[in-house]
Image 1: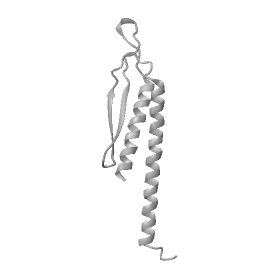
Image 2 (image 1 turned 60 degrees about the vertical axis):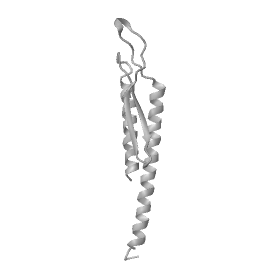
Image 3 (image 1 turned 120 degrees about the vertical axis):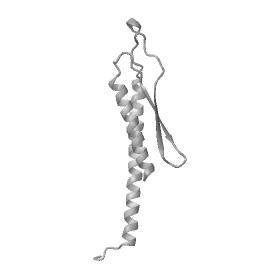
Length: 111
């Protein structure tokens, strides 16, 4: 179940970073946080984050607008939602399988 938990954590980071980017859309000189989810050979999921190097629109006094891309942030949120749903379905399937195994190994004495 560790793989599913790592997936939940990874998607939590993805949605948190996307929300932070959207919250800072009007923050001058803000650089968005880019999140990459990586699946390992062992099935575990890891995350890398980094500040975007893309420039925003130049403003007065040498500042620039944030470089937040609204459609990209919405897509990241949708990916996180789908990732959550997938991990939760896998956890539910594991739980149901374990319950079936327990029912077989330890039948109800009253039934």
